[in-house]
Length: 134
Figure 1 (tube, helix red, strand yellow):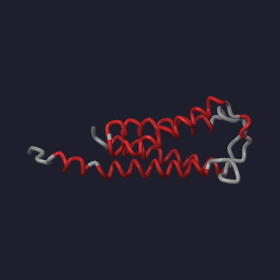
Figure 2 (cartoon, helix red, strand yellow):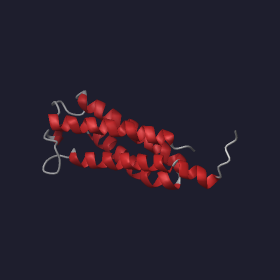
Figure 3 (tube, one colour):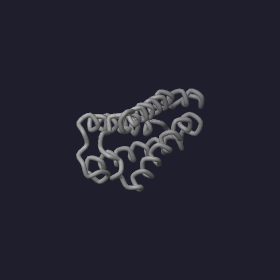
Figure 4 (cartoon, one colour):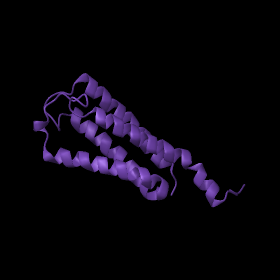
């Protein structure tokens, strides 16, 4: 049986995946704000130990996530790639922090739980980004 859908019908098929990816990015951004140092977030470790490399890595993640949201709807093929990249970068950041590559001190429990939620949202982001067809 042949697929008789027209092009607009096919783009509507991927709309839930686009919204799912955008929702995952928004969830990650909210969790990122909660990971800021006090009084805004739950981070209690001193930020003076963090190298400039990790600051640029954080900014790269942030720019990738923010750029991916509008591109998911306007240029899905590029938004899809940025969504996958943002998910992978978030996973690498959590692994680096838990391996004490970013800071020598252990992360507090509340912060580690937030990072766990970021991991889950990153996998959701990658999943929905992979569902968006080019």
